[in-house]
Length: 379
Image 1 (cartoon, rainbow, N blue to C red):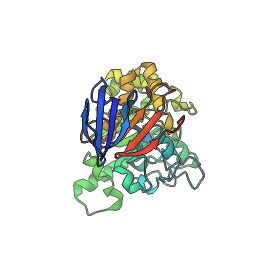
Image 2: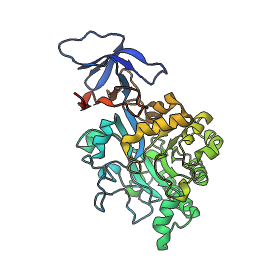
Image 3: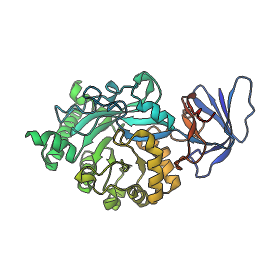
Image 4: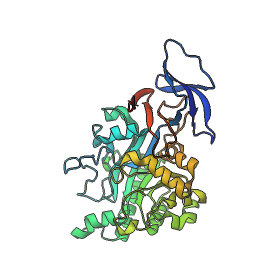
């Protein structure tokens, strides 16, 4: 058991932090109270003057797939030999030895949604994983967690320049509709198990969403149109021009995962990239999470992205929720993660200051109730 004493507890269940103690047993939070009496069996952490948060969540990344030391062998984020590859599973490509996992843990990031890149129109299956471990099966919280689809410049440039479909936005939408039509017919017909179609079962049963790579406003609207046509759940990932159509997005049930706003505007479709997008969407009524899109922006800068989004209109509390509870809800893991609550996984970070202040540091990171990072700097 681990007892965290005298900390300022930011549960994210309410807007006001609580001064008190938090008890961890067998990887779960078992008690939160103003004071908990320690016993000899408890390891204690004195958090007096420190701030305790649920572990941060990056809702869209390629950690462990596009590795830090990228080569042809270590960038496995795209199977760019076929625009339709729904059966590919992120868990078969994520390398827990990627040094980015250490950076994540040291930054208080305990959970990530990781999966294929955006070269393919249908790219494969994302997984929600924790950031500590050596065996991906033990790190996995939810897999499959989403099926990746991509619109815009990436699939067009990957295939269209070679004379293959898609070379246009119409081609992308057509391929997605064709594949989803075949999948729907397969399930409606009650066909025998078929590998190429069975991967869509959770999608059509609404257990997982489509995860749409969309930057431009027209691509966002196309993704929403297709999801509505097939009655599927959807997340709008990147959503770079979302602020231009905030009312239209708010009228839909689809959340936005905004970013990487810290990255360069290196493509035409991201020319409107701005930290104001998240705040405009949130004020319109859209549930918002933030992403570094690691390694496009490095994962340890997720708190900095939240701080800049807060500054540009999202506000401090909403920015923190965008990397904790709201991110967990969008990723469908909020029954276990995203807030400090009795019964949830003991994934948390203890900070020496406000996480949205650049000079603040993580003192301890815990995952599954185990200390996986302790900052010894200055000791």
